[in-house]
Image 1 (spheres, helix red, strand yellow):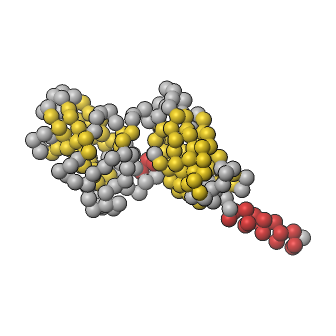
Image 2 (cartoon, rainbow, N blue to C red; image 1 turned 90 degrees about the horizontal axis):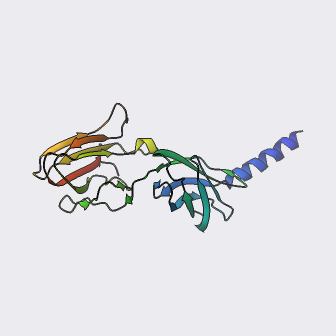
Image 3 (tube, rainbow, N blue to C red; image 1 turned 180 degrees about the vertical axis):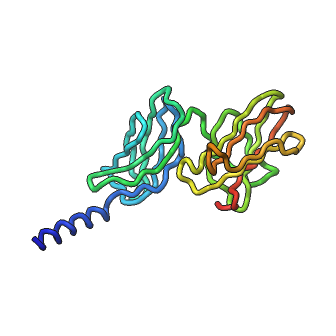
Length: 213
């Protein structure tokens, strides 16, 4: 009986060591009705790796780059509402812990700038997939017409990020017309809705409240 217990424990420990580990995904969003290739980051990836998603759709294995990177083609159903979904990878040795990503209808941009004099121009509506700039703020610009209502929202805590975002918005004359930090509904994520009173280019600043990268 003792030998049986020891042998069983040894098999479990050996299997657990080779289980796939999932640590990241890029991009952080897929669009309903579109096939999007995503790169998964982790460890112990094999050619038998498979992807599970919490949302309906299809996940196709494309290739394994190495033991720490693999590419899948994910297609969420057309018409699916915006939501936060979970991903897990698995093979015959076991299944990973989940990580979170967005299902969103917006097109995605990845360019960022920490230079206030050279903000990244955005054509609305759009989503930006990126990371905080550490001690430097991220800067964006976009054009707005008088009376136009614009919503700005950051997903960080809701996708299990440790970032604590702060938003500042300046009008074409350099006056601050919007500021958002913690929110009763969004938690530590920031969001604001404003109505433009001046036509022209608006400047958006995004940073972590503690200037962490």
